[in-house]
Amino acid sequence: MAEIDSVDEFLAVAVDAAKIAGEVIRKGFYQTKHVEHKGQVDLVTETDKACEDLIFNHLKKHFPTHKFIGEETTAANGVTELTDEPTWIVDPLDGTTNFVHGFPFVCISIGLTIGKVPTVGVVYNPIINELFTGVHGKGAFLNGNPIKVSSQDELVKSLLATEAGTKRDKLTIDATTNRINSLLYKVRSLRMSGSCALNLCGIACGRLDLFYELGFGGPWDVAGGAVIVKEAGGLVYDPSGKDFDITSQRVAASNPLLKDAFIKALQESE
View 1 (cartoon, helix red, strand yellow):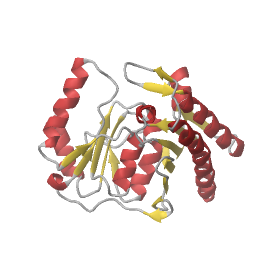
View 2 (cartoon, rainbow, N blue to C red):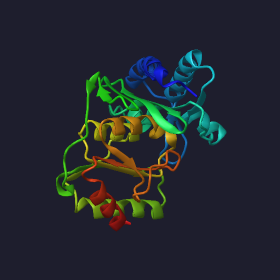
View 3 (cartoon, rainbow, N blue to C red):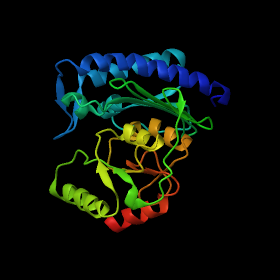
View 4 (spheres, one colour):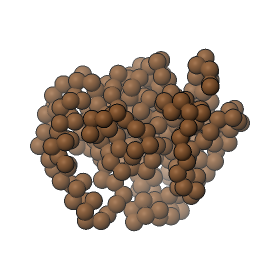
């Protein structure tokens, strides 16, 4: 088992890895993109692949015995099972569609699970230079300053974030839009920023009050952000109200004051 004393080192190395990849993303952001389609609207660029290699190489150099799960390697090779071993879970570029369109909500998400528990989280947006960090039991920070979730306790005054997802079949679209229609009657407004990891960080720093997403890519979208939300005093859970499962492709997050009302509203939107 990894020693708890070493979590500060894990964090420092993860921040370095994120910043190295961030330079590549920042340069690529203003250049012509070479885009491939993973699905009808799901995109991948050569920047995604280059950044994953950079991050993994940096982490492996420092922690050769750790396990690694990445979006691009897993997408190519099938799902990797999460074990109790220290495991780095990386999304090298969350918000690829934003990246392709020059919309500045893109980030690197790096999470470390130990015993399947998200323990270290780093989410870095190199375009607007925001670095979110969290370590289990040690708080959450934005550019080194402590952050905490909002104190909003009324749904009707809450800002909600979600995503439309990447599937474009009628059944999925209808379910998605019907759910949003139902929720819009109960909240102040809705945002779709295009990055699951940055939505979680929005909850952590109080910019957003409520967030849910169903059917996102995989654990790499939530591994970093989940630690940061919890360390900022927030809650991460399944939209049904059950415990959060990092492998389930379902997530909801809020401050503790809104959880029960939010789960009820989500259940009523089904």
